[in-house]
Length: 397
View 1 (tube, rainbow, N blue to C red):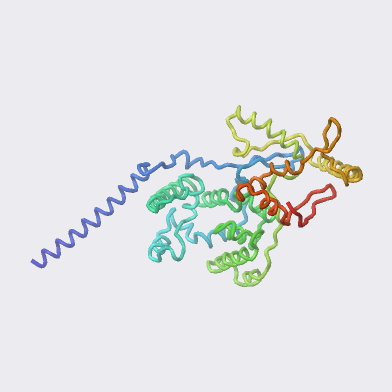
View 2: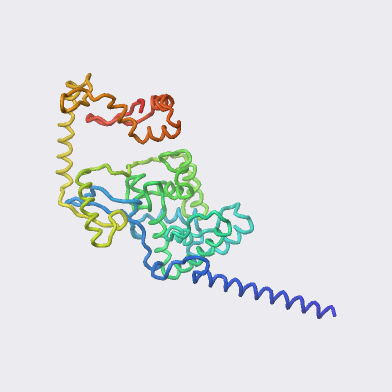
């Protein structure tokens, strides 16, 4: 009787185990076929698309500027320094070249440790998040869990269709590094004014360190946090044989040396580029393209050197006009009526009320004019422009 009971329990256990295994397989098949929400099609995986900056070139090959929603340009694997890949793998996914999209060891560790040592998302899984919008952070935990299952499936699909080098390059091309720069190419130019192929190991560590929290570890906004995070990345590289310990010791106390380039609409031929944008929008509409997403290369007839000389001449002439303006209007109000040349009353006050800051304060203080003006009169650090150059002042805004 005892033996029969034992065999019965063992048989029941194996039936339960086999049934659970089959249920898991069926569940993942249903997720794969989209029963629990939209999944990308095969063609989307084979031809992933991201918003890319359109670049404007001068006749001599120099870049005049860019049009973008996300400042992103895709580059090839051999256009990125090897130390960038080393830093990324050592920090994010040391078994990247061993697994097939899901790191079983990392997943098991994350489950056992309840996520206290970090998650187990591989680079392939993180790429899936970057490529497909279905990974917006949901509110319900059950939905987040479902998204994790989708992430696993897409990661495996990506591994089947791309080489490891292609996957890690796609990841670096799609990941955000700051509010203005998406992808390693834009980030290396923003923070170090370099091409990704020219980054050294400490610069690579700074950029890869930013991926944990782009604002907290931004080297321009939070240099101390960024340095600390950079050293964590360098230490990981030492741990996994990607960097010599002597090199780490020589770098860990070194300050971060930025060569920061503002990513904005500044640069040569601003007015020309504004007019060009209007023309290109119409052209793109006919071609089914988007000026700010399609990654166009736009070649113009402007010579960047001649443009530089022209803008320098204008700047010098405007400096003379600025002097004449101050001599004539330095102590008088220049806002006048055309009819009789009399001063327009309350011109500044009316213009002030149209500003975004006044509107925000008006909403904050519920129309209390005294409170609004008291806030506006507080000194604010800002950059004031003159034709003599830019300078910093503490002035009321």
